[in-house]
Image 1: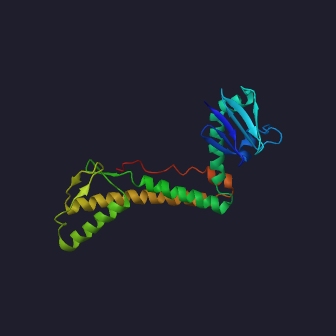
Image 2: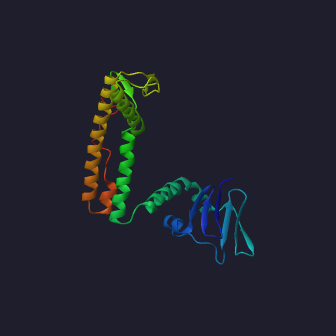
Image 3: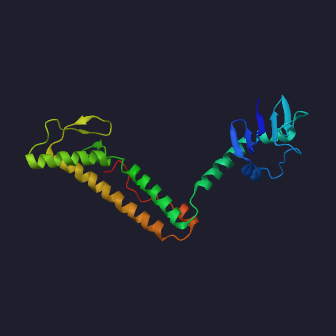
Length: 216
């Protein structure tokens, strides 16, 4: 059965939803423990009780107010989730800018994993693979041949052997893609740094202007 509990540590539990009393009172400001009590427990269809730490008192059931609390669990859950997000947000302009620029970095990294299309095949575009392939190309330019075990992965992790010129063209395409995303990253970072209020900083949309992926 569904339950409502006010525990001795001043947390409110509605089944598996746990909220501090300070938040709970923002949702139900009229809520009060029975006089002299430090806990309250209601299990639908079974019991409604409260305790002062030594003596337990039982009340009649059903408890209509408790039933209302239980029926509103989804509403409290959504409000508490929003409250936790708000609680975690930065409270000063420098911290807000740092928070948003870090989020922008993560978004940029995700875009850079979008892949590039070369010769009708889509290839990975992550920095790790790009750097590995550049090392192979540098070796080939020094020795006029690629490593005998040379291959690159396409987006589905199929191994593909490319000639030196083809690998060079693929890396040019990846570098072109990276430069496109780098310019957009720099633009958004500049715009964030120009903002002067926490509200505007946290509301800034940095998801615009990125090249379509896979990049062609």
